[in-house]
Image 1 (tube, rainbow, N blue to C red):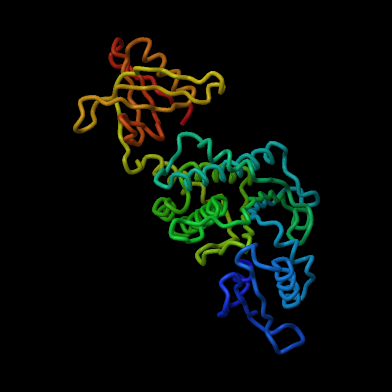
Image 2 (cartoon, rainbow, N blue to C red):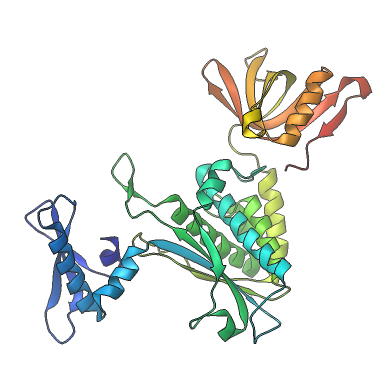
Length: 381
């Protein structure tokens, strides 16, 4: 249904709730009459398959192509994003293996951190990849296009393509509004962010990136784009996207963009600003580690501490649960062993009888025996 609406077909009044009537935006080729089709709103409609087959034949007749071609397009629902690097070897369209691997890894990380922002839009910098985001991106595919009008060999460039599968069934909000799937929202975030990069270069100001982070780039995405620029070796990179018409494309989204070496300075500045800009509910806690918990069966995946924290307005001391990465957890072990205080930042949330510190970052151990020497967990951030 989204496909025909995106192609300009208009809804018309019809006397049944289980069938929706559409009229084509123009006449069928060779006639003066528009095509009229019925689309079932549920699979329980009598003669569902027959009605759908008639609709497919009429759509393909209007578009001037076979039903098989139309079905091929409708059967695969996915978005794709392509990054093209102009190479020094125009005959073969190849890059050094280290650059190719780096580009693939950077595209993966760009998607993961974009999904991170969709999962937690209030966060402008992530100390590490969210596990849920990494799992979502595992459904994507990556490869190099070698043929066609935009193929690598034709234009003398290395062209990496990522395919993002989309569900064929819509998600609905509580009010019944259709919600775009998270991978579609993530690719739209990347495209809007890249447009902000272009504007920043034009204005010679990182403002478009830092001011629009709620729907564009976060600090991590800025860093990844700098890595992609490095792979380009001083040349402009062409970045384009193909968005499946099953889901509507917002009018403010541009699908053909350029990433130039001159944008690196503005990306670096924006990354620093976004990393230092604390999200709403951001706090700095200081206290003692009271409990350590590590799930050995999960290979150290869940490393949890409980701490007695001070400095929260209206409370003498509060129990706080914190999930840490491996290096921060090791610092917490040392602090607990030597009865030292720790200091850590994050967003505090009331959970049941206690509190949870979400998105923890910059854990420090304050050593009372050595003039408040501080040991920081920096490698993880």
